[in-house]
Image (tube, rainbow, N blue to C red; front, side, top):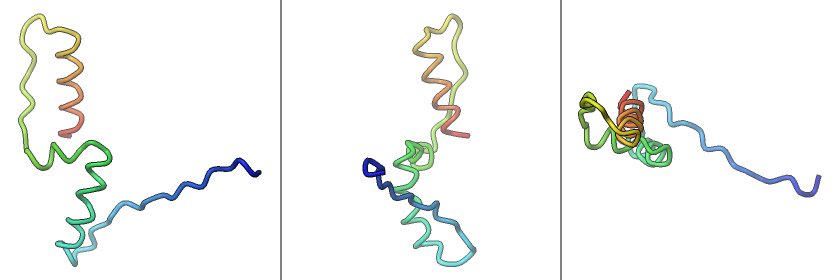
Length: 69
């Protein structure tokens, strides 16, 4: 097939107990690409929803809770 796309797959950096500094440097861009670096960097708290939340507030809270987990 001529129209086949060539995509490279970047492997998840696995920490094997050695070389933490190098692993941490490799892990940051990986988490940034997935949109998860904010949860690691900021160490934010996900507060419970107030009474009668809007759909946008529910969605935002759910996304932040999922990222934090």
